[in-house]
Amino acid sequence: MRRLVVLFLIGFSVMAMAACTRLVDADQERVCRAVLPAINLDSEIVDIAAPLSGPLPNSLRIDYTVKDPSGRLRGRVLLCRFAGTGLAIDKALLVGIATERGPVADANFYFLKRFYLDAPDGGQGEVTVAEPPPQLSRTVGIGLQQAVSALPLLAIYGLIAATYALIFGLIGRINLAFGQFAVLGGTATALGVAIALAGGVYSPFVGIGIGLAFALATSGLHGVVLGRMAIAPLRKASSQRVLIASLGLSIAMAEYLRLTQGSYAQWLPPVWNNPLPLAQADGFAVTMTPINLAISVIGFGVAITLIMAMRLTGFGRAWRAYADDPGAAALCGIDGGRLFDRTFLTACMLAGFAGFIMAIYYGNVGYTTGMSLGLKALIAAVLGGIGSVGGAFLGGLIVGAAEVLWSATMPIETRDIAIYALLVLILIIRPQGLFGTDPLTTLGERSTKT
Image 1 (cartoon, rainbow, N blue to C red):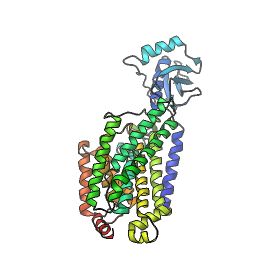
Image 2: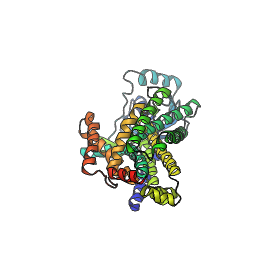
Image 3: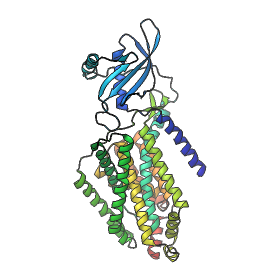
Image 4: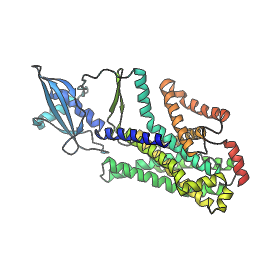
């Protein structure tokens, strides 16, 4: 297991270093590439290198090769400068261009923008260059592209499924509100980025960092307050009462978000969204964006850290002891109420982190998505073993992969029906999941012990 984890981290690190070599904005790259035909009317563009950050602030550099009328190949350079960068709304506004010969005159730049780039058919300069021969079949390429694009979704489902396992494994009760805590974290992320933009901070690192801090703080604070008010008093009550209370808490949180943040989704500016080619398939290139890679690495890293912490730390040992026998754990000095508070706080912050991934990758989080998200994560937790944190995370990966596979091969409108039907099959065929114990048996044992 440890060897697989090490190989997984090494693979992601190599991909991350490759992605860091081309952290340019996709919108800026598209605009800059569209300029190439306009400044090479008498030459044929035969090759374009990967764009790089330019020497000036908010600039992009493209090195390319052209064939002049006499048939000679010449290397050329295009430098595009934009009004903003990072999270700025005007980051794709072109304000100046230069070539290896020097800056383009203001008059020429004005006419290029007015009658070429801003024309109804502007951007006709979508440059095509010779591509390498296909290296993958179309089927394999499509499968690889779906797998790469699904990584953030797998991390989201796995993290939220782990939150169910943390609470169920401790007290044998299901809390349906974790999907809404994820939405709360995503909403807080959008709010944090908006505050950064309002303060004139356009750096993606700073803006995303503030959004992450807002997500963890908001989900953690709400988790402490709502957990003590609504869930902690019922942790020794019947499972039905906890289930009903958590369902009511989820509905109340959805209405709370609707009233405080509005019913319209707030979109975040895309960052680090330039596609990086991974392989060439028949008819298209398999690509991955740096933001996809970054949040996937962080998401899986957090999950692995949680699993290792549950095995190696004092909190993990106390959690396992109380989960095995609450009475014996209490005799050994473990405070069940304090342990529940810490566990609920950890679970809520994990859900908030999953919401952060949703907001950064998909651009927004709607207040109505919490219930559906929570139910799918519950299915994942039951599949992997709802009493096992590692098993629940693995179940999240399986459910996410199944959802992506169904969406790619079957009618997408039937996807949720298939996922919910999977829960029924799991409860019938293997109610204990892959790595857990039977939930119904566990509920009965916990009721007897408490």
